[in-house]
Length: 86
Length: 263
Image (cartoon, rainbow over all chains, first blue to last red):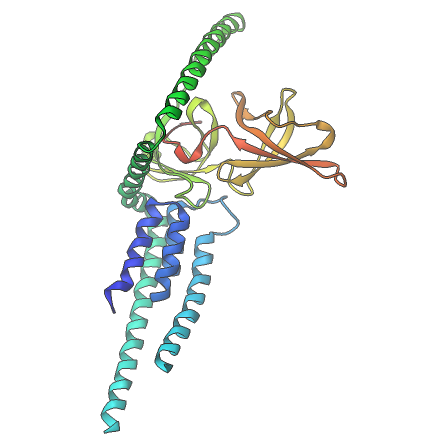
């Protein structure tokens, strides 16, 4: 696996704990295009660090992470098929 | 000639599939580990994230100082003079109010018991935190308890402790979306239900005849009525008997660095 795939993953990790959350979401979305399950991982990380009971009906990070994983899988497969199909 | 190519291709695909399965396995393993850590050892992740939160805070402060280099000196001087005048006026006003409080305390009797507030540093706050929560560096060991009330500078109420670890705690702000807090608006202290709108803001709806106006203060219950925000917009609709009131917080959440926690 090429090293460049891990750059957005590391940036997402740093952004989640150091920068306003939209940056974390953007980097998490980009990194999940290379490694789809990372969407769930970062969603869970958001919830583990910041969610408390009463902050919402459901831990949104995990829910959005699952959705993001699904979307990233579709996009990932689509891009791979297009590249292989030429 | 085709056989080796096909075989290579097949083995490549198998390798890729194995790699994907391994990645998914590792990521899911980490997800499960995170859940376990949060449930069994809630302080571990906070402790791991603490240096990054501190670095982020320092970076934000540094960026602010760096940006000030480019400010127009004349405007800055003017701003400083205005602030100095305002400061002098507030100091006088404060002296008058302090004297009045002392007189009233003497007249009505004071509260002899000392307040047992705990000072706590804020490690993470909105907008780093996507929910309206604060992460504090004081936890159970410092005497913080679930449900304790958290105040910002000047005793402005911010929220309550909702999650606790040995050396850290999480505060759910009154402004968290959907959170409802009872309060009052205006000099007449008309009762209202404040609904959190995120990022420190609130909204509420009041009967139109209440005639809430922009600039009025909003209070919540504490020791007495504590100011929590100011009315910034009142939306009325001729077809509705109620007006929607938008409230701006008194405390600037994005730059809150210290808070006090009290029972």
